[in-house]
Length: 120
Picture 1 (tube, rainbow, N blue to C red):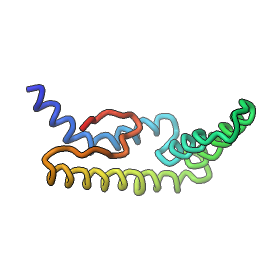
Picture 2: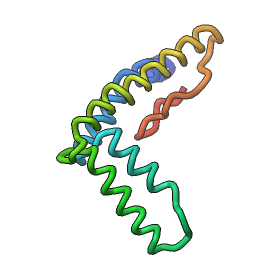
Picture 3: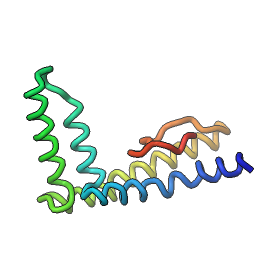
Picture 4: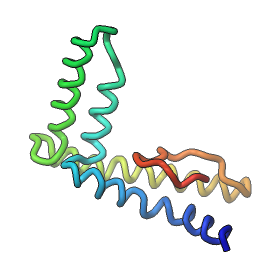
């Protein structure tokens, strides 16, 4: 029984997780574009100086917020999130399934989702 549940969870993960990620981010006025922009800009610290890093984090928030709810690029952010990220995740999942079918086992990957889970 537990193997069947685990298999069903993993099989359906690819279909429901992008929707859950979108809803979770919408709750905070974000989308995948704004969230990814913020996170990627925050990752690249220019210096080890905490004051410069604070400024950089503020800039990352400001730029990312432009693609979120109420931002000047909200339409672009929403479209990119739905058509870009979700489609890219779907295509990657299709290629993972194809590789799984050929090899008889999962070969990895996916973007992993913003919330994690769905181990393969």
